[in-house]
Structures are given as structure tokens and as C-alpha cells.
Image 1 (tube, rainbow, N blue to C red):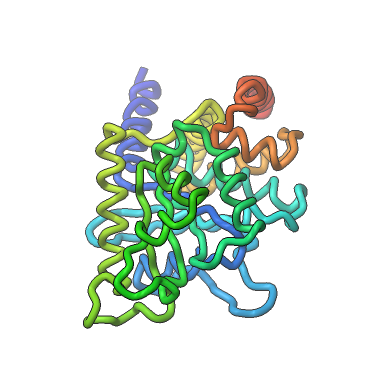
Image 2 (image 1 turned 90 degrees about the vertical axis):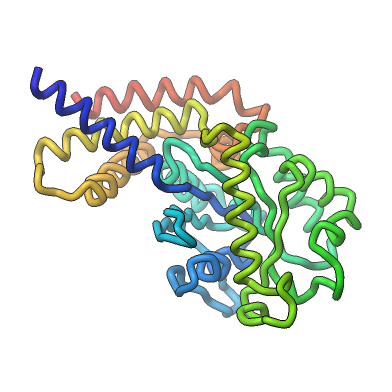
Length: 303
């Protein structure tokens, strides 16, 4: 009885910890400036950046920091929508992203570069709309980097409205869009709009408003819920074995164990896995089957 009460208390305190942090998953092509964006938002160098020819995030990374009085867990992803990335390289990073943001993100941040849209950029927009379900887009905001290319006296929304595909994507994201320039807008007191300090403040206000509109809920699905269930099981076992370990260390170890398990179990392609994560319509039929497989295999591993 005492052990059972302890587990109930452990789960309640665990959910309080989860609820205190806004989980933000950042998506975009390699080289879009996602890592630099994270450093701009946090106001310090948290993620490594590289301006070389092979620059870009190659691994899923997560950091939790306080920004403007908010606790934020920022999940920086590799280029999930890059056509040159191999399926074998992408799959483990998609799985890591899922374990890092379980039981689900409060916000998806879709990062795009400000530039003249070619067929390649249009293809990215089409892929984004294909992979995201309507439910997932309720939690999405579009953010543009390289804001120095925004014409004078023009807002980002006015610029977006000049492109039909881009305008359609932003509309599906509830009209939410922002712009940042990681290099040139660090200090610009003469123009408040073209200031990163102002834009970060507005971005966080948009995310707060979006969370309120979603009644404080985060985006989730069967796969994210199953992932969180397995992480919690691991946390209880680790806590029983190492009662002096901190909650943060327990969480890290539990996520690592579940990720290793998923890497062994999941046999679907990276494209299908990404579709399941983002709730694409064509992928929903596979979600339940995948969850059942994960649950069954996890049960075998734990017993």
C-alpha cells in the first residue's frame, strides 16, 4: 500500500514538472537558422552553430531554460524535410525528438528562410501541409529567419501575403507568423519591429495565446502517449533503485532507455514515422498498430 501511494505521489509531482515547462519542437530545413534562433531566443549560446558548407543541425538536441519568466524546453531537430537526408539517418533523430517532447509539444515552430520562393521552397511548403494534420497545425507557428531581407516599412504578414502557398500555410497555422534576424537585429533601437528583443517577446506572447486558445493542452497522439507511459515506468524503476538521484537525472536516464528500446522495435520508414508524429491523415491507420507493437515489446522488456 505504501509503495502504491509513493508511486501515485511520484506521478503527480512528475506531471507538475511537465506542466511547468513549455515544450517547443522546432522544424525546418538544414541551414534555415534553427540553432541560431534558439540562441537568439535564450539570449546566450546554447546550441552550437556552424557557418561552414556542411552546416546545420545533424542531431536532435533539447535544452530547458528560463526566458522572460517562462520555463521553455526547446527541441532542435535536424532537417526532417531535407530531400538529401537518408531514411536511416533520420529515423533515430525522429524517435529522439518524440522521446524529448513526450507527452507532446505545446508548440511546433516551423522555421523558414526569407527568400524568393523557388520550386524547391514550394515543395517544402507542400510537404509541411502534407505531414501536418489540422489538429497539429492548431499548435504551429511559422517563423522566418534572415529578417534583414524584409522590405522597409513592410510587416512579415504583408510579405507572406504576396505568396499564395505561404499565405495558405500561415492561415492554417491560425495566422501566426513572426520574423527574426539572428545576425543584424541584435540591437536596433531605431526600429522596434526590426529588433530581436521585440520579436522574441512577441513570439512568446503568441505561443502563450495559442496555448490559452488550446485550453492549456499540448499536442499529443497515441505514439506520444505511449512514449510517455514507458518513460514513466522507467522513472519509477530508476527511483526505486536510486532514491538519491535527482528528478532531472531520472528523466534523462528514462528517456535514454526508452529511446534505445524504440530504436530496436520500430521498423517503419522515416517518412511514415514522421507522418505518425505530425498526425498526417495517411499515417493514422498505422499509428495504433505501431503503438501496440511498442507496448507489447516494452512489456516484454520490463518483465
